[in-house]
Image (tube, rainbow, N blue to C red; front, side, top):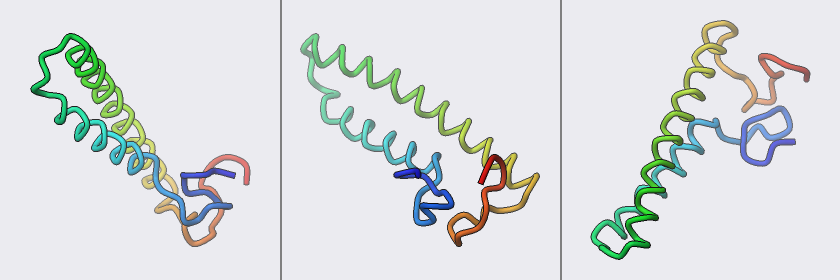
Amino acid sequence: MTRFLVSEENPGGHKLEDILSLIRGDVLKRSIKIDADPRPEALHVMGNNMKILQHLTAAIELAQDSTHVLDRAFGPSKASQGGQPRIGAA
């Protein structure tokens, strides 16, 4: 059973791209708070956060692409209404 993502067992879950977007927003908000801190540790963390944001953006784009592929091939997901998975084992 998935904890966060929409699935047969978790129809109230979220799409992967939505969760990743929320996380990206949190990292961005946290980064803004340390933007003016000139200490080396803050600069190091800011650099790491910028890399994390790039990776999250790439992951969001991949998740959106997968959703588009599935939507084109099989139509919209019915998982949130308790429907069967569009691909894979049920």
